[in-house]
Image (cartoon, rainbow over all chains, first blue to last red; front, top):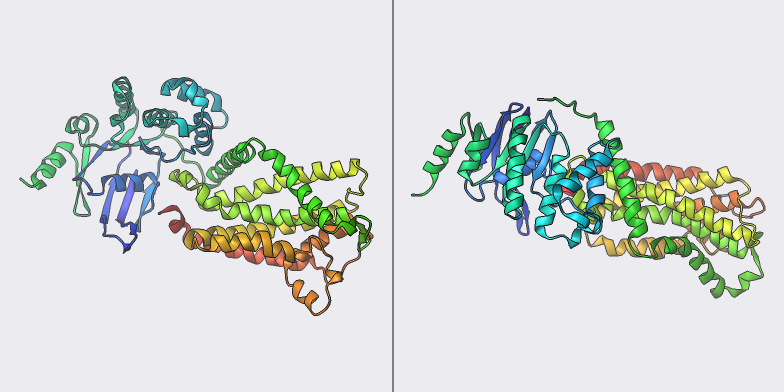
Length: 221
Length: 264
């Protein structure tokens, strides 16, 4: 269960506080329900996902997570460039409380990421595709109850995209998903419910198809 | 679907501290090729520097203590404060990427850095003093518990200063420059590293004794050498009281500005 209560968010700009991106968003997502976030560019989809993932904090309001929530997949900001892929992975395993089975998890990450010897090179030498692979592999190494995904299938080459999509399907079976995507097909495939973000507010739809219809109607003709 | 039990806040914090500690240790010791070498040599370089400047000290004793050892104990005592506070002050900016994981808080990064500096300085002190002892200096503490007590007090003031300034430099980046001067110059000269407070005439000595670090540094020397002559004003209670106040203030600042530190 993830409960979002009256969340407001605006960013600090160079000229004082910016405009409200989210103003009074409230909803709760039951465990194991997969939700798609839709809305126009700049509607606050990624912002909301970051808030749910705890990467950023709401300006006002609160978010209550009573389950293990991943960070947004495809988000690669949490790496320290001077440390190797392995050292970064090890750190993330440790803060998630996996000291006992560290070795197996690191093996899993190395095998899944398929970045070869680069796993033991500093992350700053990685291409963005390699970063994406590593990040995706690390988030798969944990049993989260809810996975957050921000256009995850958009990184990497064709082979990686295929692999990511397949893994994603198995993930959706065992855990909840909250995803941001502009691909209608992807949303229909993975999500049950939908949240339409419009003018700083969130509208909940039990069926993703209704959310998509509402979203399309709001677009300028 | 398997339901996993959420970890308790204490479990999470402990896991984060462990992970941060190991990570900081790796990056501190492997940052550059000779990082660990400089760690060992820095105190020695300071001692040699003063020995050259005050060439006379070589033959003389200060307050009944050999000149080199007088400076060495002062440098190590001061470093217990400076290493912790200077490294902890920059902990928030240096670890900004990690706050992406909501388990990691800025205050964790600050405390872990300070703890790492304590451990490192302990090993540095053992090696350097051991080396000096082998070289024939009277370098082993005669009252080790008193040394630990004074060193820990200096370190705790460093933790408090680190907590306060780590918030300070994030909110007002301009004070970073001032702090560098403050730690490395002003306090360095005001903490009795290379002069005994007894050599300072009144009323200036009383003014100088307002500096809690001077109390700590002198207490370290008293622990090392029974014969060391110093002013009876040296008071560890003052040092610890100062530590308590700064740590409380620092934690309060971190609690108050936690949000500002993780959101940019």
